Image 1 (cartoon, rainbow, N blue to C red):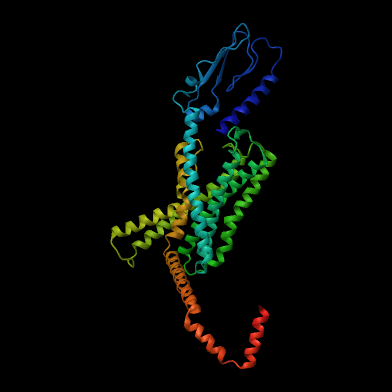
Image 2: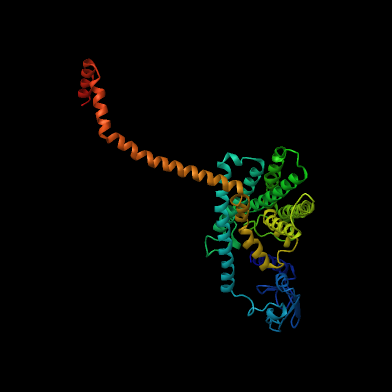
Length: 423
């Protein structure tokens, strides 16, 4: 939406600049901008032919042409054929403003619910791994960093939506505030960090499978450097390029062909490609292990185990991103929205589910802690009535009297004085 608007604004500025540069004393129709296309100056009776705007071709894949006549009265005729016919864009068959609003509103509700679910489950899983010392190991440290990257991504989405779409009466395509630029920069960083921590998870699993007898602690700092250091370096380059070369809008108007876009998109595509290669290699290793004579079971059970492992690894590696990774953003827009916004928003929840909540060790530890808490509550409940009954029982009163009788007269006198002085 913003790309089309920004392209129209850019074309309008170029059109006005071009028409002002032509000969001013030319008789005929002046240069004109009809809201979508630029028409150069023309002489009386001349027929001018121009191509359809480029964004129409991206939507319809039709390269059409429009014509206008310069009349003897120095007026432009209406463009013919109409835009809907020449450019293949039928307004009647396309979604109207209300339809588009409800269409994108449905997507907004889906990914908002997805990111909210992911955020809640990820924070819970992070707290579980942080509280229980039993889970403090290299494997879970990497999982915790991945959880944080998903938490940042969900938080960045909510912040970005809150800043850009806070005022319904204001067109977010025209915004150019510091707040919206910071929100977009944070959003881009969270996406980069999330992709690179998915890559770290894949690299760590690959390391465990290939280097069985090597301590994994020596790789932790390298993994942290890749997961947080690389996105930070990329974002510094992107922000500096934005400030000095393309400081327009809210920094969310990247053109597919500009170098600014590829500063971020390049590392993401590289991480997706490497992770996909690691995914294929991990599946190959699993197949070899299942086919070894040491593994018992039938061929069908091996296939089921392999299929289960593959399905579990897809969200953990982010393999679904490979579907549109190397396609232009205009290709399969609706399918891309379903995968990246619909499925992608719930990916954090799936990761927390597989790494934490469905983990057998975590379930055993939580049940153990729950039983301990229930037992402690039971003891506190049973001790309280006993203590009260002992304090108020006749036996306790008789015992106190017998103790007083055994005290010497001098001691009784001092006790009596102390008692009266306190009164």
